[in-house]
Image 1 (cartoon, rainbow, N blue to C red):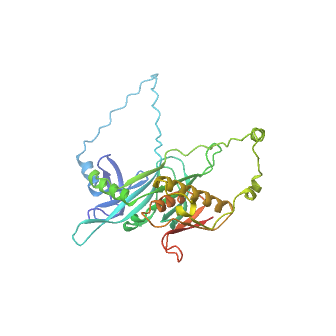
Image 2: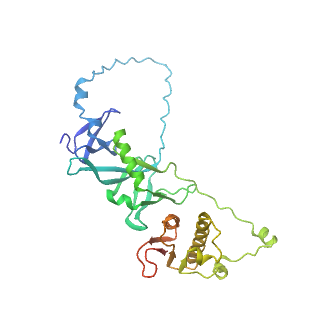
Image 3: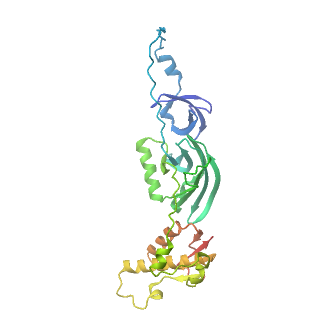
Length: 336
């Protein structure tokens, strides 16, 4: 092995000095430059000794002091605000043919802003939580989260974040949520691009600038009353709702008597409208479990339902598993 932990190195493309903090594999190391850690290929770095012995020594000119000369004002240093990113670093291994294969992905949270953020992190596969963490990340730093087995990428991982400022600001939002859902094909393509670009990692932007607080507009209810609308007390809103269903069957023949004249697109639209309606009713009636029967078919309706469930804050988890009544044609939803 050319390098060892603690070795001083120089980054070839930027001429910056750093040190090796971790040996990742036979091609990559984790380095630290000016307090920031990031992965690098071994051909992107070198020992600093060659530079020390070949670089021309700069001879400092003798200073001449002249009185009463007005000094030029130094230009202000520009602070960069690049944002916060989720970074994935492939870790390679050899197969029986001595070819490089991806064994796992190291997951990092990268903060290129100067603010320190508190964050809650949750990784789910197919709606089920796999890894949770609550911590903080300082400005201009990175944070190692965990590793993901490469074969798990095909299970549509969903990275859920909730950020808040370490030092509260009345003008800024009290918290900020971001959800990043990846598909296997997207990740495979990114890894192939790394081979041609000679980069060690690929990243997804979570946000650029922490958002401002959004002031809620107060509605003048007297205008609605004068227009003939009935205004209900929110505490009694449940009294005016339709009854909730713990099971809703979305087969079109269960929703409509006459449906044969409808196109497939119109059928899907009606099914999704029914799904949204009864899911909201289940939430407002505080049901803890809700079953949606979507059938098997080509899986278009099921995928669209799962996509919408991923964006519902009150949905704790959901799973499509064998059910003794519906087989694999139903999804069980668990509400908070």
